[in-house]
Amino acid sequence: MNQQTRIPATYMRGGTSKGVFFRLQDLPPAAQVPGAARDALLLRVIGSPDPYGKQIDGMGNGTSSTSKAVIVAPATKADHDVDYLFGQVAIDRPFVDWSGNCGNLSAAVGAFAIQAGLVDAARVPHVGVAVVRIWQANIGKTIIAHIPMTGGQVQELGDFELDGVTFPAAEVVLEFMDPAADEEGAGANSTSSAMFPTGQLIDDLEVPGIGTLRATMINAGIPTIFIEAQAVGCTGAELQDAINGDARALAMFETIRVHGAVRMGLVATLEQAAQRQHTPKVAFVAPPAPYVASSGRQVSAGDIDLLVRALSMGKLHHAMMGTAAVAIGAAAAIPGTLVNLAAGGGERHVVRFGHPSGTLRVGAEAVQQDGQWRVVKAVMSRSARILMEGWVRA
Image (cartoon, rainbow, N blue to C red; front, side, top):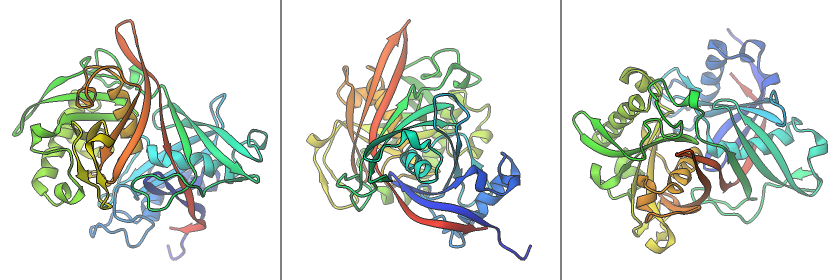
């Protein structure tokens, strides 16, 4: 009890998130398998639970975007290079949520895997683009990461700019293959398409104390509940402080989230939904309108197709979660969803939306088969960089 455990680790930024990355083989034996020992280790590494909400005694930074851990291992699936497991570490509770993926940190997995020697050297060009086939173990989906290489090394620096990240870097293109949930992942109450667990593009969601809201509930990238901004007294152009400084608004969105989780069949009870903070997400949409981003940059209505704001772990996100961006792209590509209607309706393969930090472009290829919608893939660009490597102590 007097000695800390010293574990090889890498601290990385991926997209607009940061997390601690581990090779599975480097974890203590008890933490190499799912369970209490693994969760306890990651909680201690990140610095949770912290009643002060700052994670001062750990690697977290007191936000949902930085309270994250990643475990990467040699592939267990054919035609893949690595397995990737993501843990969203609660800040104020002793809980690690393994129910979903992090789309932002997905951008860093390929680079980490190459640097850590987990990708067959024959598949990594000296110069060019390495194609890393990632099995996302949380949700059982494939992600294809296109990693730029220079001189036999991962190229991290470049001129690609990502709103929500201060400095430019090399562009990493991500393809989220068949991102909608499989039928068995649609939820216990699902009777229709896994992507739309209720079988509807728009539902009437009854939320006690709030009313009946029109909602598009989609399971693509990550389960997400989309509602109309005006229906909850918002414009869609809000920045973080407008929501995160309003306890009433946060409570309202959490109430919507837990009722939506039950309606989607993700959980059986409101209590279970309250314990599963990472999924589903709740987001509100509005038609394009001008606003000033958190950086002070003016975003004009002509720059975007719609406005989207999303909450993660009970707070308005400072930019946009990568998995929620996949959900936005998928929903925008399907005529008749609230996301598609806010963007002007009709068929579209690419959408650019405004978020608190600026704008983001995401593409999605949707097809209708036997009356059911399927998203073949969603594509977006992010960037990633190693911030520190060595050992972490817990």
